[in-house]
Amino acid sequence: MASTASPPVFERVAGIRAIAESGRFKAWLLDQFGVLHDGKKPYPGAILALEKLAENGAKMVIISNSSRRSSVTMKKLKSLGFDTSCFLATITSGELTHQHLQKRDDPWFAALGRKCIHITWDDRGAISLEGLGLQVVNNVDDAEFILAHGTEALGSPSGVPLPKSLEELEQVLMLGIEKRLPMVVANPDYVTVEARDLRVMPGMFFF
View 1 (cartoon, one colour):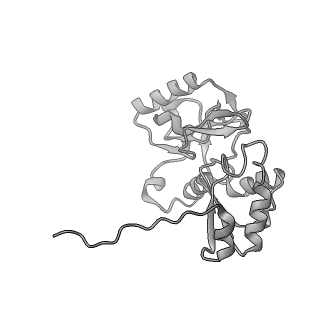
View 2 (cartoon, one colour):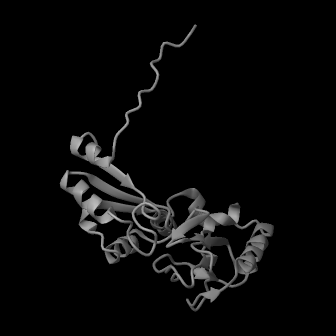
View 3 (cartoon, helix red, strand yellow):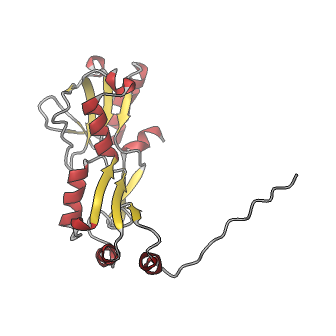
């Protein structure tokens, strides 16, 4: 018997202004890198567009694969000139990673242990593990899991990141795979935009 379902109806709009002024949508979910800014500066018209959306009652939430916490993301947006009062909230994969490692109310996270190899940032600024009760180790044989926030350095017990090439980090990961260590990736992206360049993100370790 042939289906009697109606075909989908598509609506063509000239821009988001008509949608915003219609009042049909109260919640707006926005990405940041490559949408609002390029990591260094806002895209032309982005700040004004968000302010106009807010004036029309839009409740905006930033959803990002950034490995950094939500509060850091807000500070970044403010430093780029965005009015952060326009945003209802910010949700990042880094924030969710932090919460899961802190609460450990999920069986998988609860079983991770406390000793970790920490793959983090160097030039972009290492990510703090404060409040998580983790012990960063240098040797895979001493680790209970791998935590990947970045692609530029290895965390150290002293807290000072040790710059490493991608090839060196991949060698560490191979050792972890051989030991069957679980891995937490705080940013699943392969790359992100930074000005006119693309920067490699932790998701590339699985590419």
